[in-house]
Image 1 (cartoon, rainbow, N blue to C red):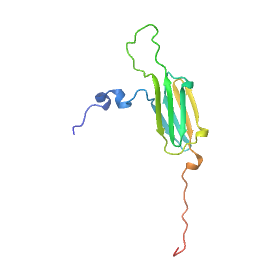
Image 2: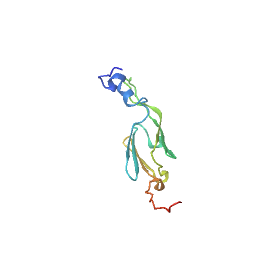
Image 3: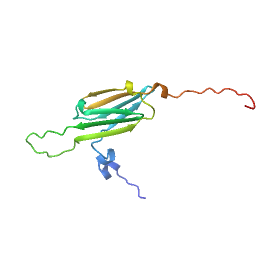
Length: 133
């Protein structure tokens, strides 16, 4: 198979290489010992148009982005996606939905998702057993 010399974004278009569905909001996920910080980029959305649900280890984000008002002009180019969106992510450990917090500022939705206290691993001590047991 011939190896391409050009970047994937050039061959398939930047949007295809980065995201197949422009309506799906991009997310950054950072994990530390206490939990996860998820930052979704969803400009053009109002907080009352955003729904976050955690079921088990699955986090679902749903919302609606407003379309640009064209006033009385004509669009020359449309690159911003508008309409309903949904994004589902599975977390690697059990989250604590009761302590999860969400804030929306300047087009960024920040979710602070703590890990459930009982889901952390622990060391299992090994004790010497009796012979023949």
